[in-house]
Image (cartoon, rainbow, N blue to C red):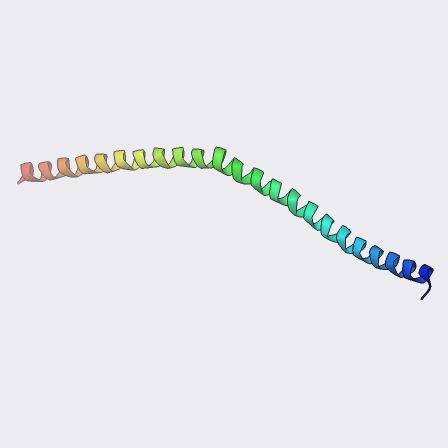
Length: 86
């Protein structure tokens, strides 16, 4: 085998491996970018959205408790009227 042929064959193999490496490298760059976007969104959810939702849940729970107390008072007053009417 001639040295030029061996060098040419090695160069072709190098080109094939380089092409595969370029594809994998591009995929890794895209995955890294997507990971960073996802991480940013997750932090936004954790730092901004979840505390706001927790505050809203607390407000709703407080309103529900107030409503339940009002209903209980209303029911007691209704019973007292019924007993007074008898």
